[in-house]
Image (cartoon, rainbow, N blue to C red; front, side):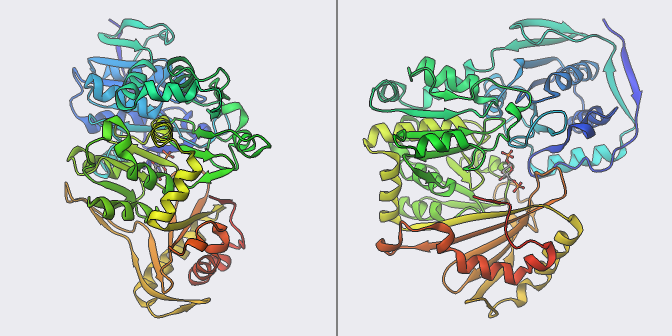
Length: 545
Ligand code: G16
């Protein structure tokens, strides 16, 4: 058995997990002891690790393999009983959640910075998921953070690297390691949820053409195995399907800007019937109809409204949930279905308790995330299969499904404006000032609108009573529109301000109009109240979704 080494170390500042784990530049993660400190902090938080079982894998970005070797040595030295690792060090985030649940491990470590770019000069991330398969709740991430502040030592082994590419079992310092195929368990789970036979009939119909853009990221092998191999879609349906450490030099964020190739195919002279893209770690999704962008808030509402068409959700939904900045389109469906709709802070970790307590079945966020209680992460391919199942059962194209949804429920116009790379001090000051003034804003005029209500969103978890404060400033205007301000918790450079606006419309003549035009007054009023130009020096956002 290899000797356990105890390495002396000092705390690093700033190892506080954000919206979704610890995300930093590769250069920061690869400095001596940095990753090790954070991993040991996770282990210390877990307490006695002897005999515990963990799943480990990542989205395949630069430093994924090296990080897994480091984590495996440390896990063995800390006495873990077993590690389950995806072949090649790969697990998409939803597949990891599936594996933790299926094999009943004590949790998992996911190596990913999600939709952030990868490569030696880009981003890396580490996230701990609990035994329910979901991202650690705030109490746990806080406990990990506290450990990082006082860490003095970590444990590792003096061994070489193991072979990550061969499925099978081996042993490392007395700990069992099992390398498993990263796709099969997840693909089987999808087959148990959706009507694969009918979806296959759709995908092999020569008149139905779709495209899935894997953006050179982790979903390539999953999408090929499920869409092309199991369901029979024509080869080439999956584009950019070979995972790459730097995501082909691109930005693996499924939106209209970064999934350009897909967008062009959906808007050309002979547009495809359906298009979709997923992000770096496979948990986000963007879906498109022919020449038609489907906003994630609408997509979530449509899935909930049509859930009865999918085998796994034939029986009624227990409830639904959305993050606070997500439009209220979901709430209207919940009201119609007479089921509860929960409003949570931003971050998938807030949905876990609701699912574990059987309070919700489906949930989602404006940030291109949708999912259900089949796992405890958002799930990009699941959303794509859900859409295909609805299309085949309703015999309608995606575009008509959304338009009919608006006719029935009204339309919640929604947009998000991101101001990136801002000075953190000034932007923090802006949010702080807004927070301080929030209760005094009611009755104030802003541009063409007046403010009817305003608050700083706080959430009390209905399951464990945990309170999360300062989750975003909300301003409600007299025309029924809403603006929300918050700072991103996933960036790795400076500050990103997110401004979310939405407005409900029921007039049938006003349902198919341009979103930015429909929200222009709200955006203008919001900018004025917060003093965006004054504090950030910006007059236009960097990204609009
Ligand atoms: C993560 C979280 C999501 C959140 C998103 C954006 O997604 O899991 O819940 O909506 O970040 O967060 P922020 O606005 O703080 O940047 P992902 O796909 O990056 O893991």
